[in-house]
Structure formats: structure tokens, C-alpha cells
Image (tube, rainbow, N blue to C red):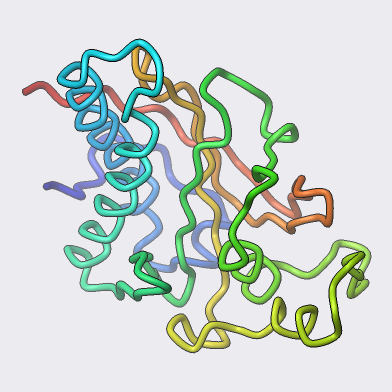
Amino acid sequence: MSVSGGDWTRPSAWAFERFGRQADVLAASVPQQLAAAHAKAHATHLTAGLKKRSPYGVTLAQAVRERLADMAREMDESVRDVRGYEYAVIQEYALFPYRYADRLKPLDRARLPSNVSPTRRRLFRAHGPKSPEGLFELDDGLTTEEYIGLHEAFEELGASTKLVCVFFTADAENGIHAIHWGEAHLEPDRSFTWPHSEQLPVAPVPLG
């Protein structure tokens, strides 16, 4: 696997503020890792030969996490395990990949599913940016203990580690449609408010 920057437009000031000297390589490599993950998931999809309940989505999610973790290791950065899932951590920013749609859809329509795990909710509440209004919003139906628990940082990541989201859309036939990265605040209705987001280019699917 290569994480060479290649021909790449210089990353934004936001990227350099978070990833420092790794920003160039990271901004070029993330699209490459998603393309490679799609290639693996597409191969699994073809092998299964199913029109419905294809293993594409599950395979893609796992392949993306693995590719980003391997990328971090190659960059001599950290990989941290949270509840059995590995997260690439670059300069104390954990990359959180998520396919938010199987068709091209605006980022402001991204939403977590209704059965979202407590782990994901806690990742956003404890390691994501605070509410843009600066409020510590309440969740209806939660006990005090549950509410406090959602805002407790994962020791595995470290209290100072923050999330950088890598949100994308993809499907088995057309591959990766669009990639966005930035900082997302999870709202009580499972939608997101983005204090900052920017789009990354889509890399070609590797041959072979």
C-alpha cells in the first residue's frame, strides 16, 4: 500500500492545523484508501452473486476501517481499538469513516440510522465538537447516568483526541461518489451540524 502524496493540490489551512506535516500525505491517501476498500467490497459483491442483501456495505465498512488503520501505521501514527473497531489516529485526531448514503446525496442530509449504537453516539458526544451554540443539549428519555455516560471520553482514544469525520457515498456498481471530511456535531435527531467540512477528490479504483 502506498500513501504517497502524488499530484495533489495543497491541503487547506484547516487540514494543516489538525494534521501538521502529515496533512499533504493524508489528504491524498484517504481517497486512495476508500477506492481500494471499494474494490475489495465490489469483488465480494460479485462473488456473492446477490441482487438483494449484498455483502457490499458491510464489507466496505470493514475494509475502509482496515485501510485507514494500515495507512496510519505506514505513516508511523497511532491505531487505537475502541470496542473491537480500529481507528486511525493522526496527530491526536481520530478518523471516523461513515458511508451515509448509497447514492449521491448532499452532506447536510447525512444522518445516523435509528438503531445507531451507543458507542457511536458516545464517540460524537465525547470526542466531537461542541454544539455550535455552545449548549450542552439534553436527550429526551435518558437517565442522568446515561446522559453523563454519553459524554465520557473513551480512555482508549484519550480524552484530548478529537474526531475528524470522513463521510462518503458509494454503491457497488458505481463505487465512491463523493468524499467529505471535517468536524461534525451529532444532533439529538441523529442529523449533523458541521462547524467545518470540505470535499476531497475521488480516487480511481486500483486495477487488479
